[in-house]
Image (cartoon, rainbow, N blue to C red; front, side, top):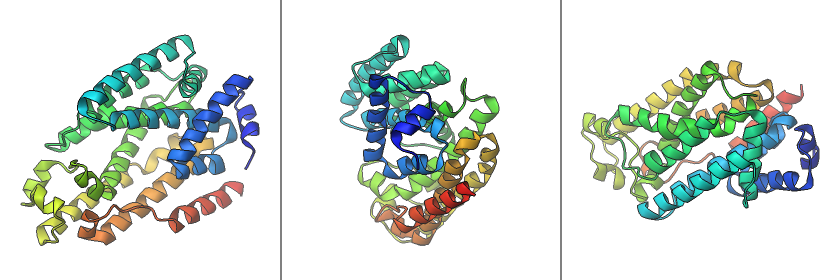
Length: 301
């Protein structure tokens, strides 16, 4: 693995302050999401790594603000953050090194600004004001408003000029799968936080109540609901299979690894059954390490 300094140079990032800004963004990712950071550093082509690290740091920053505090404080903090982001993108400067790095990445890679503004708008509405989904249509609206642009403010930086329509659509399918798996894996924690991420219409279809889920009742109806949700997630994963053909070659090992880890996590959810209502289903330690090492070996061949 090349040193971080070599990676910055490979991306054409020069100047002491700018290199420090990207280093700040990368360290934030490492602290918050070490597994994605390691995947980028080990598997992605070095010229792409700083752009993507800055994008992931920005995505995480917005997520954190949208999910922290009371609804009123979230709204106020997101409005303040949106103003700072807009200024950074317009001027290329900011008191925040993370925003300076991200503004430089957006400008250098010519990512269309509408993805950034759409993500911030979605954070202030779909995420900060989240009250669950009445039906599948509401879930799809959530993806369009928040999850999809949230991924593209990060992964869109792999494409000079931003993703074209076909590439963006492929990431929309990927996000659909990722969000379904994430909601199932985090079901226990979300319920404990007062968030129900399965559409209420599907609970009604199986004659399951929210209380059944919150109290982790192991009933045939609950098991049938969870099995059906896992089936939808698996179908979404299969629908996202073609994304590798539309990913920059330098990011294909990372994207393939992400897909493999999602499939691993979904299988763990399926094995857990109703136990997924009592504890979140993580990746564990062995599977991510094994997947990363296998992908690293393949990338070297």
